[in-house]
Image (tube, rainbow, N blue to C red; front, side, top):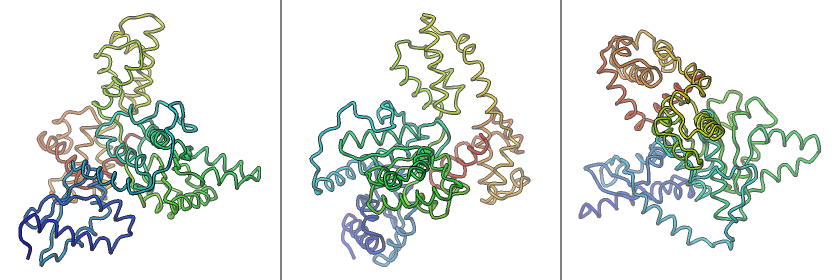
Length: 455
């Protein structure tokens, strides 16, 4: 037996850690478990300190079984575990210590004007607005830029115009700022295809391979375009393996999860899913408003808060469209020397864009109910029934949640459509986000349904 809770805490984690070391690859253990901090024992549960929710979710989703097994039969007890976030400083210090133990390269700081080929200078981490919808992706990209190879590959997916390319290019800038000699290749999948075809035509295939394989960091936008291109997939597969085996950082973006890309070979799906996969969702109101306010800093013409609130409230499909609307108003004000853009003027100037935005938002309660029923493989009647088993109650809450988020209907109107009262809908709005935080599979289902319904 062990004396003292503190001694027991560290002994339990020491035993678990030794078991994990024996079962996992050395690099895997170093990346995911070495920096975990044992915080306290809560009865028969050990609380483990990690940096953030992203780290905790990834461990739970990918190594939960390993953790549970490592904590079984320790001094006759089967310990459970939970994560506590906010232990950023301890992890940071240990990472820094590890970095100090490695020989440093004598690299000069990169000139401020240096921009990785194909990247825009404005796409950096400093002007990327972080909200709940993109926080995990931002954290993972920042970590990959500061500790290449830790999350490898890093796969970021989400809809058009919501920040994937911005993050990808921000990584390039960050890596280059730390090491001016870093060999970085940024390309879109379409450019990758064009260069590959040209290399076959001009018999310069060795030069093409060198350009994409003799690098420290490979960044590829829109890898879903690999679908149904057999020869290109073969080339990409070999390129991926070459870099991965050298522990070179690979970051990919797509509009879909790897498993959702039809026409993508299983071996590539497996490779893409072997690292960290994280999603960027369309920004919420608060994030959209923050983006607009940050953009205003770059313009002499400043719009009233009333106009910014109007834009943030009415343009939600993409950051790209939101920025375009702001630029149109600023350009008009500059050209016409108007000191103030009124709400009426903004509505007139953005009339067509707002019509398109509203048209894209016309989603019915019935279409949401049917999509949810199909996704969870239950009958439509079950969603409306009073049945309460988990496999029906959870999808029903998801359907209510999506109805409230994606339509203009009120709580009572949505409740009526489900033959429930408004309090049930309000409860769903509270419960679904909580469930998504605990259940990565459910979070992905909700995200997938949102994208499908948005078309």
